[in-house]
Image (cartoon, rainbow, N blue to C red; front, side, top):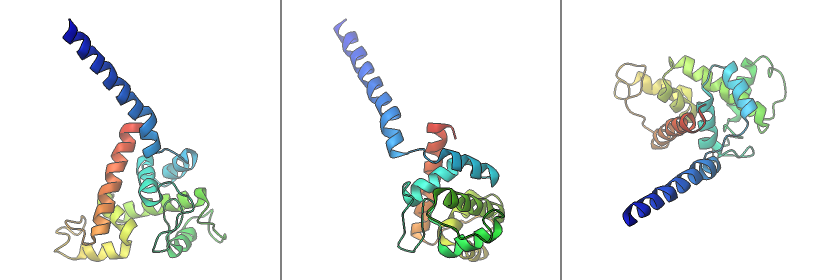
Length: 183
């Protein structure tokens, strides 16, 4: 009887710790913010919301004022050249002075760009994310190299270690967002 009581106590404590982790710790470590903007623009540009959240987390850690060592800005770390080019492609942004630090603008451009990359690279997530990180022209070069891509569509090898880590991290975090939040 004593052993059963001890086992039930451990099960109860494990349940408390698990619930605390799931409901308190997870949302702090893997937040869900800017839901309205993510939902709107992810839907508009045909991108999974879980992917957008994962990119935001991995790129800026949800810091709307973040600036990378390469000069990429905002939540989704959009470079100035990409921002101008993308804004020319997006009807409601064309011709406007864009504020890349504005969360809605940054998320719209990031979602458009992710959607564009997914279309350009035939829906291949790994290749599209490599393009988001290293640049789509660089990825196109890799795809043309038989040592890096046997079929010209998927990357067998990502030559940049930073990009390889980035792609793996975003895919992992996307799975976590799908599991934790059902997005």
